[in-house]
Length: 475
Ligand SMILES: [Zn+2]
Image (cartoon, rainbow, N blue to C red; front, side, top):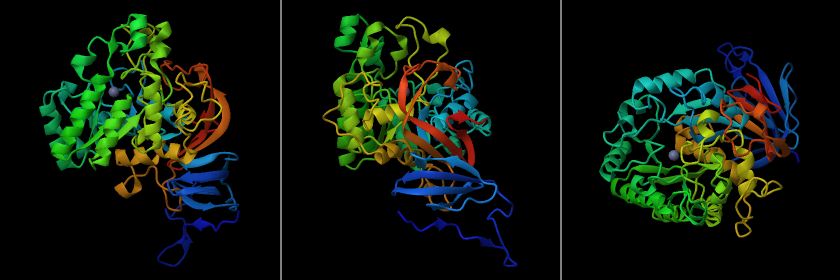
């Protein structure tokens, strides 16, 4: 295939001399021999990065002298992945994770941006804590944005100073870990959010219906004698917030949808033209409540793993555009906390490093579909194209987070001359094992620990720097 090179023209200074755009000699990087995949399509091309910017996208480009070469043979070269939902645990629970360790895990997972959930200790319900997290993130190996809480202390009563937080660049607000129980509070929050042009992320869980539950309420919870959380605990809040969205004109993003009927409600709301978006996690696309048959707390998450039918409905919702994003809900817990009986262990599992492989297996099929999945083979849900899967992990969440280029951001955009160099290079056929030494997080609570996965992030480029090379973190 012959393709014309697309490159940035040299910049002439006042005297007519050409020089690099920044006026100094910049580090150059060549990503060689891959297939460039972004929202505009897929094509074979090398990508030349100079400084923090893509300079040229072209097959067989001459390598500039002194440039570092990254081999991308057999690989997809995509905009960096964007995670809307990660628990970085700092401040307050640095034993579980820190901003720096989570960012390294994110980079190894191909992510160049993550949104840090605000349920830290103290929570991100004021400018001081938001600034603390942003300060911790300033030298990190991926972009870390903070979400703010909807209510003070995540107590569900009084609104957090959303305007003040928005002025610091916060675009997403959530009391994640809990849903906003009071419909009146949620209505006021949506009215306020609409005025500010920000989005509210809802953890849909009716506290009264879910109280005391440790897994999905159904056949498996009955058999195991474990108190359950009914699907309806999620669905009543999805339905309520769709109604409040209609009432206020505010924007709601549904976090970690887990049931078939939740997806159906979101599909109907979108058909009506309401401003709703939704995410699912890799684990809700691949595991069911049957995984709890051995009472292993690794599989305890909130919302809980559901049924085969729910998993298949969520995969179908991804394929039909009902679900906009795959988000990890990366939730580190130290083994002292997680290695406990099911009823006392905290919910949550790691997600950043395994996200691509697990999502690809669930949605695009392929050789490890069975090995990562306790759900049926999904024969009635046709596999998605890899580009559509990457859209769920990159450019679609980038838009929800306000990171897209036309929103003034630097993530998820087409790979073209002038684009910010936030990229990932993924070998969809490479097999690897998520062993303990590979995990960059401070915690180890992954159900895929020691499991063979297919689909490996080979290189990650963040602001022009190769922060992951050949699946190894560079700093
Ligand atoms: Zn949540």
